[in-house]
Image 1 (cartoon, one colour):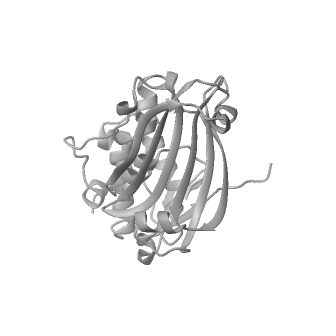
Image 2: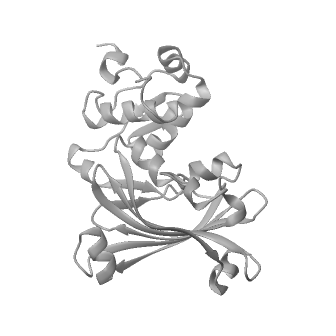
Image 3: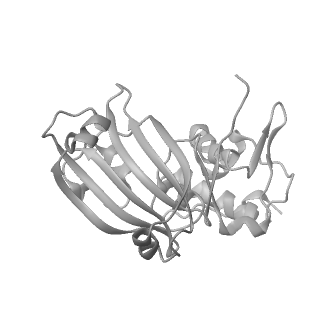
Length: 252
């Protein structure tokens, strides 16, 4: 069977970057076992010809699948299907070595992201926020609190603070914060984040529809621009029964 028959063609009416649409097709074919474990992908040049995409776009689509363990690059041999088993589809693997937004993560996995806003407002920076953001006392900030969903299932609770110079208004953020920042030229290029295991509080559990004390992956994050200004401070609470955090390490 021809590769494009196994994987499918890009839906030109679907929203989102083309690399994410190709990534979604490849992920679905791997998880649905239409591409067999150990089988080789066409070369980047061949994929570019098949889908009328640049090699940069092809490489970007493949990189996340390699990070997620679905594909494997073998030096001098090419790129091969590496996994996962079908039973693992229910959980989400979040790479903590690659900077991407929640919406991008879900779209790349073929899942539909959504949000329920709890707060989207402007205010004055608190002393703790001023310290984290590097702002002067009294500086304006935008605050965002929301529940994040994938295919209608609750996934996380987020609290985010952004300096007001980074966005035209709080309403500029519709689904993806990073997309809104990117439009202003302020997409972060690196983050510093700390992860620890905690239990959901009673309020958080009620919002997410889980039990108080259920396992939670708490991520405390600061995101930086190329000039080292802080563009985002976030506290994110991910469901421990739905998320795996994955990092690729190499010997320095």
